[in-house]
Length: 362
Image (cartoon, rainbow, N blue to C red; front, side, top):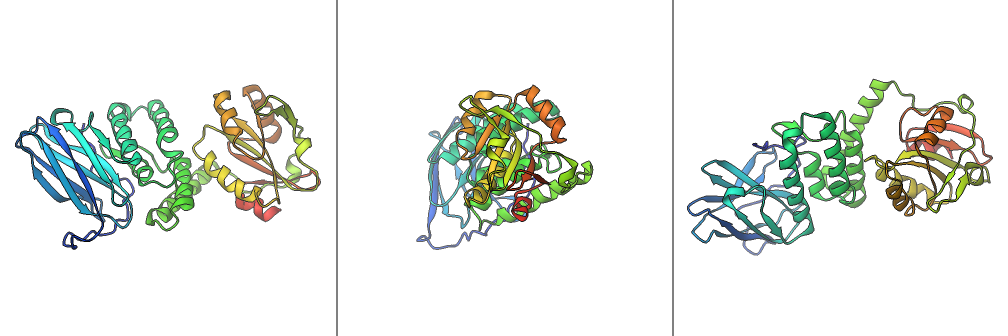
């Protein structure tokens, strides 16, 4: 199966001068390709239009050894090795942040699927993703399989990527011209990666692009559902909630809300890709001391929820399927996450669609 040579969202790539002096910072890629005698190996990078262009080449001898050295990019980028075989071109993709020295060993017959790469964690992560994608690719047209695969990819490669170029590459990957992550359907993933870039790589040109994409996706979703942005407090009464925390002790909403400080009542799915991004923004506001949080968490895995919830500084309780059904009916919850703002006296004030709405209300 041939993979598209284009990203779904084309990266903004700084030009690399091939004629730069040898004193410029550089990265190196070396290794060997077995059973590749007489074949040509190329080092390539994408240009500003996403078209892959060669930087260097090696005519492989019987030992298959090669070594490439090139000017380090000004921003992290994805490069690839391209091997021309009798059965068609095959590729190994890898990230370069700056002056890495990577080592790659492969066999011509299984060049794209069973290679080994050493030199950086990001390179190993990308290699693992590419191998998993090769196995998944035949099932991309199956919605259930695709959604399950994307959830695994998010947990394994995107959730803790900290603005890595690998996360951008994965998010914009296409298979036979089909996007792995679709802007219309997977806005929460784009939002999560955008938030990570904003936190860890605010000056990266991809950050603004990801944020625009995530915002556009959210607008489309709200337009389709006709969702309101804010409702008046009188539409919903404050219904009592009393659920277990990570230690198994029940904590009532009334124990947190209505004690002189506004409270955010947050209903969130701990398996959803957007939840970490939401928690990052909530923590910034929580740390100011102007807001308390009562977080009703949902997860298909209570153990996973418990481990995640213990890392949060605010009150977090667990809702099983029955609990969620009752609470959702009481609070007219149609989707997650859903946030309500409770005033300092314990009165339900408004429904909020974002942390910015909370800030305006406290």
